[in-house]
Length: 265
Image: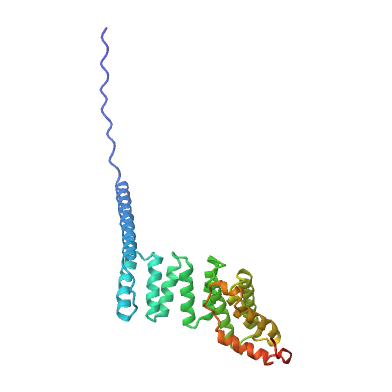
C-alpha cells in the first residue's frame, strides 16, 4: 500500500524589520561606540596626567605651560576631579583665586578629599570670605575629625574670624562665633591632649574678649609652651606665635587683666 505524498509546504519567510527597529539598532550601536570612545578618552587623559611631571620650580612661564596642558586634559575628561584640583592649584599659584574657587567647587563633585576642601577654604580666606572659609574647613574635618593637621587650621580660622569681628555687628552673632570657637577648642583639647596648639587656642579663648579668666589662660599658655610631654607631639608648626603668647603671659603677670594675678610663678 503506497503512502500518500506529503503536502508541499512553502517555507515561511520572516518579514524584514520595520524602519523604526533598524533606526533603534543603529542608535544603540552608536551609543555603544560613543561610550567606548568616552572611556578611552578618560583613561588617556588620566594616563597623560599621571605621566607628565608637575613643574619643580613655579614661575610664570612654567605655570602657564603646565596649566595649558591641564586645560587640554580637562577638555578630554571634564569630570576628572583630580586633574581639576591640580588645575585649581595652578590658578591659585598664579594669583587667580576666584578662578581657583570655581574649579575647586567643580572638583568637589567628583573628588571629595580633604586636600581639595582645605585649598578651597584657603582660597575663600584670601578672597576675604571668612564665613565660607570656616564652613568649608568644617566640611574638611567631616572626612577625618581627628586629623592633626587640619584641626589646628580650623581653630586658626575661627580665631581669625573672632579677631576680624566688626564691633558694629550684632552682639548675638559674636557670641555665637565665640561659642563655636570654644566648642572646637575643647573638642581638639580632648582629642589631642599632647598638641600644644590645643592649649594655646584654649588660652586665647579664656583671655579674649573676656578678661575674667586670665588665670586659666595663663595655665593653658604654660602647657602650650612647656617642654614636658607636649614636646613629644612632633608638632612644631604652632598656629599661634610663641612671641605673642609670651607677651600675653607677661601682661597677666604684671596685672594687666586683674591685680590679683601679679607675681605669678
